[in-house]
Length: 347
Image (cartoon, rainbow, N blue to C red; front, side):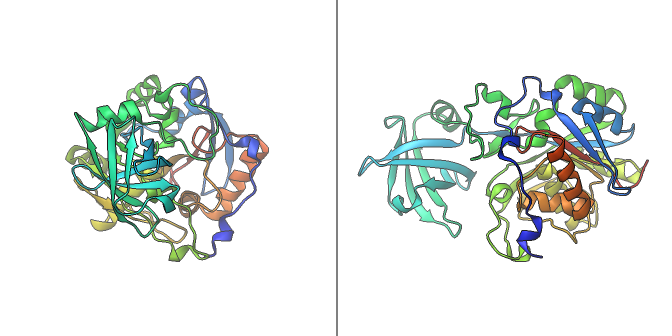
């Protein structure tokens, strides 16, 4: 399949620059992949879409203030570092700008020397490995020095850092938010629980694999970058129990989907409690083994995420839905509106 098959024109003014004041005030486009029907709702309608006995699975990762601005100790040149994943006690895989200025042995200073980092390796995708040096607790120092790693298409300043976190964010380690979860409030989650829907949390720390652009002409050649996931025994048990009794598993976000499908692919459709790394790439032709429905945002043209939703609902259906969303002036991408892909079979 050619990458250009997943391209579409999006008016720039539809790219949401700021979050809505009320998380749940976003719109919800509901897609029925079986009938290809589309419905327009507000996000709280999601409660009506879920049935007693279903399972809603959310990613409880917490975004780090992963963007650091520093200077090269030798020259004073300005360097931007984006933390991607921890690979040792004080070693991190990162993206840097401008990369050509950072070679093995380069030391970057942050916050007038409050923390320094020395480059120890260069990576295939252009990234760098840094060894960090600091006094105290790393995440406390990072809180002082780091900024939220907003996507490059967002140009407005984020006034409240917590608006780029889900209300249930817990396990720190992400370089980007699992944005499908930004629409949920505690009140909405409580309504869903009260309806008899099981809610479980898993973790996938969002890194380069999720937002790295596809650079090859054919999508089959693209290699995903690995990201860390963790599923507890109790979460696995709940998901398997729901599946066994015929309930639907609804994933909140592509990160949740990729985690569940990674594990289900290993264990014949079952979920097991475990930790590991995933580089699963889901595109049309993939057969889903765990999830039935998906709550997700609207994704970038030619991205691995738009390919994932096309794999679930069908490319023709998704592109029709996106065309309707553009026509109806939905807000796109991280701070934008949501889409719900209904399970193909009713309860």
